[in-house]
Image 1: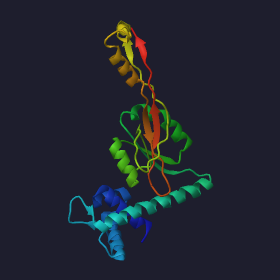
Image 2: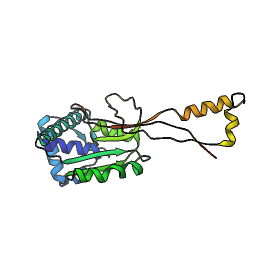
Image 3: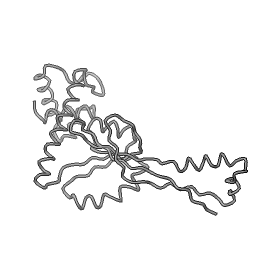
Image 4: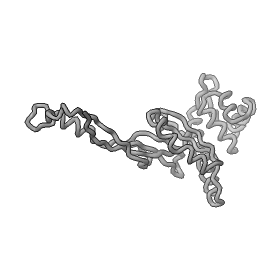
Length: 226
């Protein structure tokens, strides 16, 4: 059993297609298939059901792939630790960002990050919250930037920033805020809701869970306009 073989089965599980997995691993499909076949012979079980399209893991294959992801994650942690002790920062950082944040947040940090960490390959994808969480659990991305609270088991949320939310209210509506106006209760409820804090989140990797996130939160204020 080798790290390469584990990488190959994880790739096939990720793409559910041998040709796409081979392209991702920069090898030919026969090479990838041969190595997976050798691993299956060594373990004495079939990892994938090749009769199905897309390719699906067998029941024992699911457990094997899950352990493979953890082993590869621990290998990467060890490699990063040794590189850090040598003062070297390199490798690949894969981040998922929700589309509503990406256009505004990415330009704020990507130029500075790439300048400071020139040897780190930064890969950013716009993904929905569900996809980000799924890929974090699978170890397909290292971090995610999204809205919190998530209340997900095993997910650590860290505040990145507070996003100000503004409500513009016409001065003509001042009468609505009067205590003796029939609609004052409803208006007060609306403004109270606008002031309710909202959060952005991200997750951090642990040594046993190859997933990570980062978090930010948003508070709200009300601004009056004419």
